[in-house]
Length: 103
Picture (cartoon, rainbow, N blue to C red):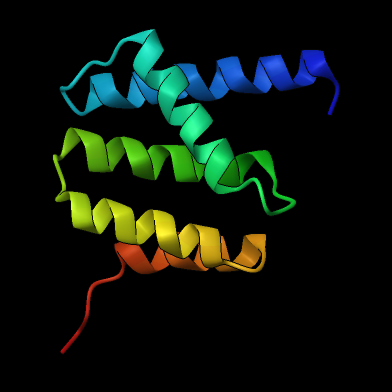
């Protein structure tokens, strides 16, 4: 992507994070949205990924932060993302977090 496209993507994802946080009743500052964006790009640095995957990882990090999930669980998620061999595995990981066990 070009630098302009990268900047536009970053602004778009950061704004979406702020909008989502507002909807959850936990507004965040632009600096927090930026931190989440950079954290997500760092986690995906070893992969070739689509913007949607980046947005989903950043959104998951936001939910963990807003819901004050235990540090161990956040660290587990980050470790799992770093170990994913491709974008598809990252998507499956995120989907698995939203599934409920029917047993």
